[in-house]
Length: 297
Image 1 (cartoon, rainbow, N blue to C red):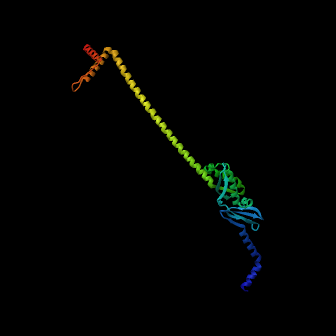
Image 2 (cartoon, rainbow, N blue to C red):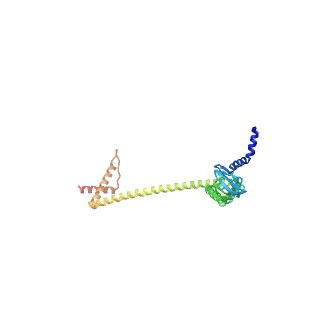
Image 3 (tube, rainbow, N blue to C red):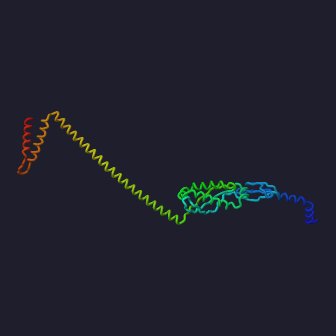
């Protein structure tokens, strides 16, 4: 018996066992599923959802269950979307938006929505138009972070039924048409000119205030000086009055006469010959002074 006859006899006698072994191998291959970390598998049985397989080794029923969808659970970014919107003050703007999301419930995503990216983009466009319509242009520019939060919150409520999670929403840019840009530039220049005028007026006002303060200070100092001088004169007068009270009127007359004599002496001094003409009243006072001097001696 040759080798070929031996093989034919072996296969003929053990064909049932060989078929059974092959069936077992196929069952093992079709019943064991290894799911990558970045994916989830949606399993159907006779066209109906059976289960969702997570990362790792999973077992399914061979020949009855099949993997119908392999869904990536990695974060995705929608292409930048442009949409027009009108602010509450009737300014047309073009908004560039971008959305990041990931699928967390694949069974909802594959059975409830056909094109998830297009659905999200359309939803974002409607939300952006609605939110911007409640704001003025200045508020859109200055409160962009708050606007992004409102858009993301509104989007999360809508897409929850699709089994996805919105991880981030971004407003990349807010563009204006040329006419609006020109009007805003003109308004900006006018505002700058107004601020310059206000600054100049405030500087002039401050200068006038400082000048008035300086003049007031000078007047106060002059008044203080006059008050000090008046006090000094009053003090001198009181001293003279006190001296007259203590020494009598003759002491005062004596001092006056003495000063008159000294004054006449100075008048009579000279380098050459000169004639000094004096009124008679001066001579009388001169005589009074000598009389007082004689009396005191």
